[in-house]
Image (tube, rainbow, N blue to C red; front, side):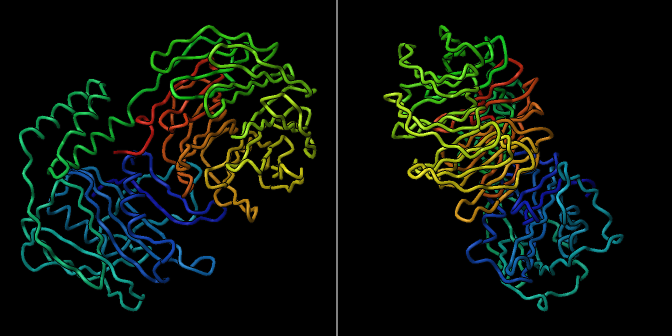
Length: 544
């Protein structure tokens, strides 16, 4: 079986539930593991009892397989899943299939108790006769004669129900496997075998797949996806089409925008409009369709550090190192008003649906304004160092602020009262709320945290950046988090599990700003390398 990629899903101390993977496992395969294995085979609301175990085999395409073990482990007074999975990207003939099933019966040769700092290593599978399994596998009852396909499922068995590893009976010489996505979960209580008749692909589908392959090699990823998507849903080539769609999705390059003369500190998006603010003191509007800029606004007398657009895209608010806040009419570029009051640079802004504007400053204060009138409503004090980040909850009633004093403060906007969250070891540089009200923070300590505000407890700690986290943004549907760092990288995270989905490379210096479009289909980034990048969802989003 040689070398295989490795994936693990479980709950780890201080990190919560996480998906770990080898670099050899493509993003599309990681998502298939989460959605088709983990989500289908483990219920958080009704988990199987401690001691339950199963083995599984998932065919994603003619030469792509996920296989491994599931154990229900005791942790924190209840059952916790432990999925150990291997990824094979070679065709599976009868001999290789027999060896694979023998591994499942014997048990896993590897185990991950503590997540490594780097991605999981690939696994060099030992010979079956030369290793002792870390955990027991499961006995598989195989057919005595050729069967068109396996349709297997699990039952909740106790440890005593599992049998010693037997000698695997020879498999039938013919073991057809459909090219469609065939999920097989192997259990010990019942094994059913159902007839399945393979659908021969049409000439049209064969042509579509061949064309998609040519387009992928030519780098025309959009047309590649279009051709692959046109393959019939019930075609035997549907799985290969899905793989091609995934490959052409993750390979699509971003659009790079050049024009600023210094660090791009802030970005905001509304529909086809992208706005950027820079250390060159300019605000630029860009047409996302063409990548061309409009005439820049000479906005401030210092660095433009923060930008925020109103929900209707008609009003832009900017914050600057000149200690002022500008309110702009987007359609004309007219400066409507300038808000003054801060005595140090304005580092962050948040704008609520009802027109409440919040600003955080190097003067250690947070100011709350009425954006339509420019009236200062209140000044909040409590931090002992620069306020780098502010964020408003979805209902607009709660404010979060992050500071170089390493704390996060949660404010009741109506009363001005606050409580403090601690945990980060260095400055809290970025904050954002999810649609369901959880708070996410990014810090100079290289980590991000997902907080449960009801309890003040960290749900997940996201580890992956190799230097300070400088920016973050939450996709509007609440599924994905983007973070930018001083390691020049953008990382995409699954918010529900805390798992790293993808790393975007291309910037040549710090990534100091990231923002999603309101529809979640575009991610933009600003960097110290003086460029913006526009990443369509097809380059980082879920595989079709």
